[in-house]
Image (cartoon, rainbow, N blue to C red):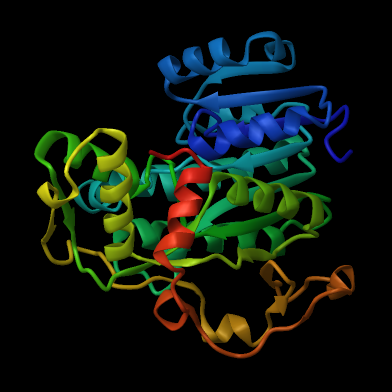
Amino acid sequence: MFFKNKKVLIIGGTGTIGRSLLTHILTEEPEVVVIVSRDEYKQHLLQSEMGSKSSKIRYFIGDIRNYDRMLNVMEDIDYVFHVAAMKHVTHCEENPFEAVLTNIIGTQNVIKAAKTQGVKKVVFSSSDKAIAPTNNYGATKLTAERLIHAAQQSKGSNKISFSSVRFGNVMGSRGSVIPLFLKQINENKKISITDPNMSRFMMTVEQATLMTIEAMKESIGGETFILKMPVVLIKDLAEVVIEEAANKYNMNVDEIAIEEIGLRPGEKKYEELMTFEESLKALELPNMFIVPSNSSDLSNYQKAIKAKPGTYQSSHQKPITKEVLRQLIQNQSLI
């Protein structure tokens, strides 16, 4: 077991992905899992929820904007999962420098502290919005990716490795649109969508978690791991949520409207997970793409094949059917 008797740090550990990572890592008998976040209430809830498992968990209040705190919590740590971020597009647009402080300066603090403390591996969670960004959130994530890759290139004799995972939307996470749709249905019997033909990459919390852990286990440094994930049309998602919510709350489907409000500032009609330039050196596995750094030892990925050149856009992929989408939502108990 990879994490057996190891010390693991999850920065942003009270978020959706952080909590899921914690649950999975505990099954491999680590020595300790350290949870760092800046929300004491969410830490209290998590601590109560974990109960008897909490003997192997340590909870620390801390913000990645504070380098000294990152240095302190990384003492004697083996592996670091960096999943903390400002991630709501609108809030990052309206508070651009706050997003810079968390997503860029914070990531540099993580890098610097990890190098100083002799951490073995760092995995950073990025976003499809980092590709050809049209909003501040995407721009900060792109810069953070570049920082991670630069850290790998400039580590010198340090044995640490840095890598990234690039996500689409995670169904059921705090950033997911599903909770917003449910709130709108319960309050106004109406859902607001920006464009019915808008498409998004969607993945479950379980998929995001397992991919992040796989990246930690398999990475040798400098890679970007990109999960192959289904594409969903926003109109289909809205209709399925309405049908499922109406059934659960005993509402009439015909009384719930869909209102089209147009794209918001910085919002894209489709998303991208890999650029054409990245595809030229990318490797492909059945469930993911791996974009290596220029110095990566590709012999570690003998089962991978060379990816076909091309962009990986949601508008170029066939969306899943409403029934497949419905099954995903039901299986994840999202409504």
